[in-house]
Image (cartoon, rainbow, N blue to C red):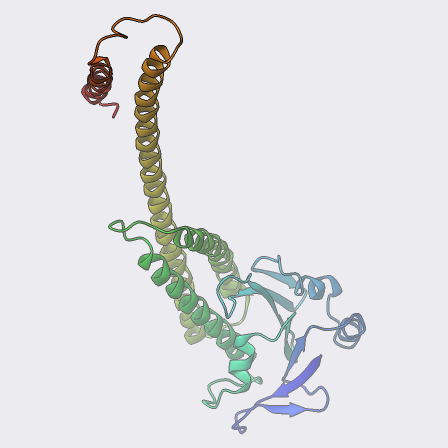
Length: 304
């Protein structure tokens, strides 16, 4: 699907166009092969780069082909647990084009933005508007994950299996965020020197660079917390398992002594004290003393 949109200084809202006009915004969502060929032929775009914009595994980067700029960014999912989406921004002399596999939150925010803080006729400012919205989305998702992690890293309570599974899921998401932050920061540093930003616009981009660095550091700190709580859980579970094994070992020895003594006196052969009237009580007392002595020995050796 290809949409032609435009907003100039005199427009209050984004205008939907029937066809292409200079200084418009071409918004492309899940294009077919025919639509890709149409874009390549009509606007002299690089087909391989457009295909990369639909690749969910593409990393944030920037390609400069002649006078054209292809900027790939990652968009955080609306719901945690889903993968990051790829979003391509193409800057040409006469227009700006965006391409994605699905309609993303940042694009919807722009379409329904009543503030009038962006214009498609000012491509660099529009680019910064897109990047700023995406940074804000990343910051919101990052803080949401960090809050969820903090609620599950309380060492004063025992973690449930559900808590551990959630921490593993958050660890995966945070690792993907760290990778995206790192590549995005590298991409920002490239475009700030190559594209024609005004000094005021450069200040905005430098703030975005600082935001990505802070977001990356927050993710790394949260990952360390997850690693620490996972190690703590492993140590706790190992300690419980060792105590359980020790208890079962003592119980096994205890039952083995009883089984051995009762087995000997249960055989159809002559045994000592079999005719004594208090033989049963003597055997029980002997068995108890033997087991208690064995338990005291284990405690002394700090095995139990």
